[in-house]
Image 1 (cartoon, helix red, strand yellow):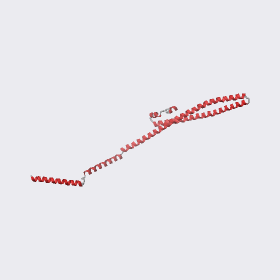
Image 2: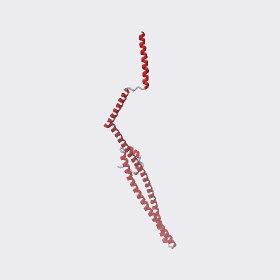
Image 3: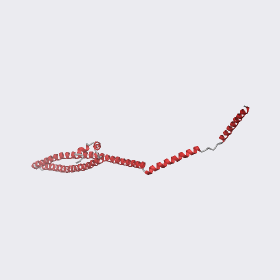
Image 4: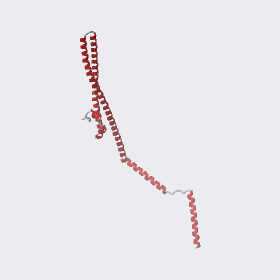
Length: 222
């Protein structure tokens, strides 16, 4: 069973609403496009038939109008020859073809209207079909983008949980510990005294010696 029941259902359909309700939008839009293409073929075939009928009526009309003109000329000739009886008969034939001409003109107007309406239907259907194809393109693009993102995220998760990655993290942690231990050892290593420190040390020695002498002097005095 098709998605649409008739041509008007297609041209008035809200494609977004149909796809939003679909469990599988990609499959749905594919079916819609297929049905639209089949309908377009049928409508174009019908239009070709109407156009052929229009051409047939136009040829018949041209032929009938030619017959009416011919009997008009014969009636004129009969009058010139004094044959009123033949003139009357010719004019009667002319009226017969004029009547056929009027009928053919009415048929031609209807055929032209059918062709015009069908061509309008074709344009509307082609526009709807183009919309459906664009939606199909967007759906495919979104599916491809989602698949690529899923693949990338899967690769990231596998890398995060892989044995190699865990070993690499352990290796980095080991390097970090070695660096910390090296910094600690370096901080405990005696630093070479610079020139300023040496003079400061000499000054402190003088002060200590002076205080020592003072202490000895105080002891001797007591």
